[in-house]
Image 1 (cartoon, rainbow, N blue to C red):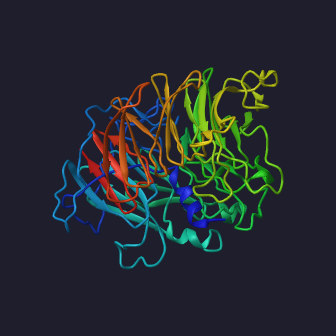
Image 2 (tube, rainbow, N blue to C red):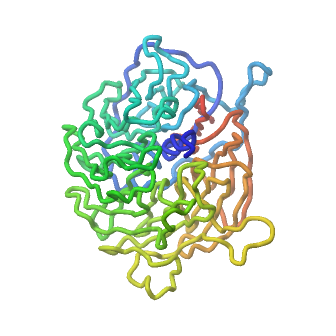
Length: 509
């Protein structure tokens, strides 16, 4: 198994973007943050203004921002050695050499996960998972929280990946998960309030590393633990929880579920999503067994489950079943999610599917096939499925409709935008799954699309940010190169576009 890839897989889902250079300053001591965030309804999603306080911006995880306008389409990151001046760059912040967690923007501060390749504190040495905090206004460094990456819990490759969890910020506190499976509650000054060690308490052992971006629902912090198999494919703790709810005030366990059990295929790197159906909330987790599970948030009682892979691979097959690395998106009573495996997985199948599900049903709502017209699917939650192999296969060109994905969708105005890891972007009809257009970047995509101001932003492994016009006809507005790999998702908050490359955080205006 290619471990280089998979540690990143864990890091991708919670990724976002920022941009460029113009004289940042370093602060050795924290600056007092402005603590003025007001409580908001989780089901309404955001925070004040157009802050983006969690992965996906809201508990429904839809990569859509309907607030910000006049977002940038032209900029130059600049190059001091080549004497190229930055253009439309508000500020740039230096990170480690791998940066996958965040950024999130809340109440005047920006949080991003990275590694310790370029230590800001000479007393913090060696491989660490680092949460950095910057001031939103000018990119000034405020503080950092370093965390050990225990070799007996994670893989050796995880030592270089840093913090892959995107924090969620609520009021004066933020919550995130370390690679070694510790849930952290810290205040916005960086002081740790409590820690819940999933490995110590439950023997949770991740496949390479843990990365979940938590979700706060009322007084509970929802987390996918990351429990998975080792490099040889052995699951050491099948009874360990895959999903937990922790009391945000006390740091105590409220409930847990190990429903995926011994069916976990490799790892568990998705993020929980919140829905409201018939006036009642439900929290949805993607298990490492390709199954979606919906629970009552307060009790942990199961509402429904849906196996997203109706027909499994035969035992001993070189290819493995697809599972869910992406984060489910909820819009109304519909859920949208794509299937895949961690990036560059040597055992990945070329063909995959993107699904739309009806989340109003209860019990086992698994489809028997991807054919919506199949009579066996009458009681399933399947609304439509896009993907699968092209039959008969064409003599030239691509042989599948949809490949594996780790990307989270953007759903807006009746359209779905979803990318694949092999480098394709699709525009689909949200009601029917009909494909309107697609685009081949000829470069891998690990992040997600981001809809804002009638535009779709997306980054790729060639370092390009490609900007499309919203609509049923493909139209590229601009392509801007960031001079480094972009494995993250672009994010806009309070009128500023943020792009994270491997080593820098850019604020673009």
